[in-house]
Picture 1 (cartoon, rainbow, N blue to C red):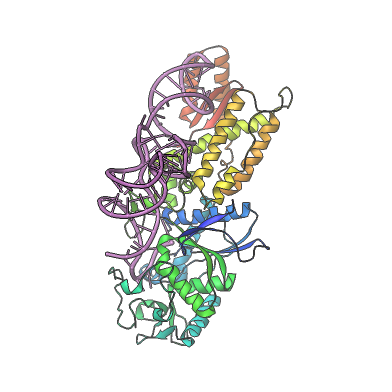
Picture 2 (cartoon, rainbow, N blue to C red):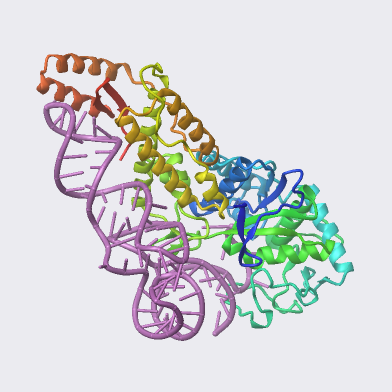
Amino acid sequence: MALRFFNTYSRKIEEFEPRDPAARAISIYTCGPTVYSRAHIGNFRAYIFEDLLQRHLELRGYKVHRVMNITDVDDKTIRGAREAKVPLTKFTEQFKKAFFQDAETLRIKRADEFPAATDQRYVDRMIAMIAELIARGLAYQADDKSVYFRINKFPNYGKLAHFDLTQLQSTGRVKHDEYDKEHIGDFALWKAWDEEDADVKWDSPWGPGRPGWHIECSAMAMTLLGDQIDIHCGGVDNIFPHHEAEIAQSEGVTGKKFVRYWLHCAHLLVDSQKMAKSLGNFFTVPDVLAKGYTGRELRYALLRVHYRVPLNFTWEGMKEARESLARIDEWLTRLKQKSQEANVERPASNVQRPTQKFEEALDDDLNISAALGVLFESIRETNRAMDENKLDAASANVWLDWWKRINTVLDLEPETKIAVPEEVVQLGEQRENARREKNWKRSDELRDRISALGWDVRDTKDGQKLARRIAE
RNA sequence: GGCGGGGUAGCCAAGUGGUAAGGUCGCGGUCUGCAAAACCGCUAUUCGCGGGUUCGAUUCCCGCCCCCGCCUCCA
């Protein structure tokens, strides 16, 4: 079966056909963070979904060119800078840094480019686009000096979100004056400067001001990826108005279809409610690390549920992620040991060889749950074979190669082993001696002492094994 | 009100017109001095509710209920 994705635009699963199938090159634009505070793990769920998308496409032999924007100017960043009494760039810098740090913790592959909205290169492009939209009658400057997109002149407006514009209802979330606009749904392309903006302003043919949120994505996407891009992603809350507006602006300028496939990630929930800064029910990556979990464990927890299904974040879920990973780790350790054994007495293994089922599951709209099911079935099967001594070194290597392949998508390889401290090593040696003498009392005492140092002892038929215990 | 997503075991979660993957937890067993890990076995006659189509529906159709999201600057 071919690669297929659920396209928000059509609301259907569609077979994936890039613009340029021969070149195997794919352009992806992903909406990045607004750097007014530290991104929360709900934000990162979307980025992990995009990471999975990119990695799977690459596994399938596509060459991905991905852009992720950084929104470093908007109402919130300006307000934050003003309240912190620092220049805007200084204010946003800390959150950009934190974002990259957290992304690295979660093993999210870096995009090829991270354009910033304040880059003059893109501001110029935005201004050029707005001018073009005005020339085409798709935009106008209102009495408040801001420039708005005229949605009534763009018949497809509302098509992505499947909204009937005549039915648009205000939820009261927008408190700004709207009487300057021709239509309540017209959105700002250029926001005229006002006192609260202080020194945050750019010159434009319409006077000083700053870009509207939506236009920056259109400008950056088109500058870096061209007029037409293959895939555009974001959270479901970006569908309207943000992505709807992007379509209007971009297609309004070029007259060409802007995006072939729109993919949107469902929300991360807390207590069955959307995780959001405004609700105060959010956790950041450092919050989760402070609870003793690793980035890898959080990555797994956020990755394991299909991207279109809302995912409820719980500490129980984190625990489950930890246990599941421990199972993978144990399996890898065993396989590696087995692969190093001299390949002698074992006849050809009759254990099943790895299949293509893992990547086939991902071909189906990134069905990660099914893919992980394949992984765990394989684990059970090979474990059983090893127990029964039916897996030879060569087969173990075949399975390790398979893991290496699927791990280019999962990126869940255990952290590199931490050296066992000398104190623990010595206690371990003493314990082995005690065990040889069948002095179980002393052996158990030593195990307790090792445990107190944060290490677990495991007696296998190949002798004692030490493993660092994960913090509870 | 409009438009979406979802409701499958204690919890998380795949899936299909032919009789329920996987993870986690719990219980029993093998192994072990004991434990841990690993492995084996058990744990949904049932897939929100009510109808319909069908030889057969959790899967298709109709109606209803519940949860979540979007409806102008939130991933």
